[in-house]
Image 1 (cartoon, rainbow, N blue to C red):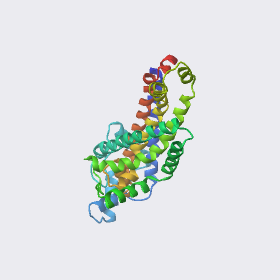
Image 2 (tube, one colour):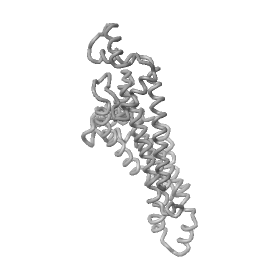
Image 3 (cartoon, rainbow, N blue to C red):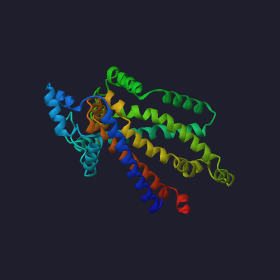
Image 4 (cartoon, rainbow, N blue to C red):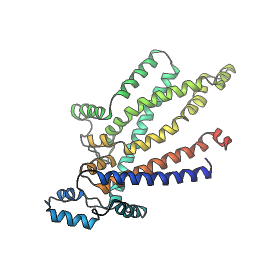
Length: 312
């Protein structure tokens, strides 16, 4: 990816973020519920109509839509997403505090996914149409069919209640609190990645260079580990980057089940309390992170795959 392409992608990110900001603000503007009442309720105060109206005027919530959006967008460009109505703290501070726990959960689930899916995918491909292949494909089929919330509840029942090996309520501190939420996310991903690894390895095994190496007497194990294995992982890089982005924004259900203090749990709380500033900041943060990760993954191809350098 050349400099012009990177600049073009950066411009696209700016345009997309602008569109996302407008749509997000419009949806929260039209959504039912009064954030001012929820703000008072969170502090244990029963507000009068006069208090609600006065607070709405102070916060600028009675201004026209475009006035509110322009003011909010200008503050966002300066890094100020406003203050949370329900928690009475700056949105940027809240998001920053929850980002690292979610990032740890994402990275650990990706590691577990690779540990599970790569060996199973390789075995399934190398023993195609054997009993191992049928067993792995059957397991992945079941894994794809199970929703995350059901897997999480099942793991919690077995390992937290019956075996009592892990805490019911997770924290962002130790490994034991992080393992079950990460495993819940990894199980669904492993099923999809195992199938992708199997397909990629089978495609590589049918390439001419494999047939030629075998004809020259090169050991099959050497061909597999030095050529087939690294080449089969290249098509998965894009999926890997997309998975990281989706996990950063798609762990809400799992975080709520395990009471994990991450971004997803914060977002659910913001939605239930109609905390508009927090919802808008959350969406913009995740959109930016998702697109930056995809840009980094695309740019990394030129360094990982020599064929891309030849095209340049």
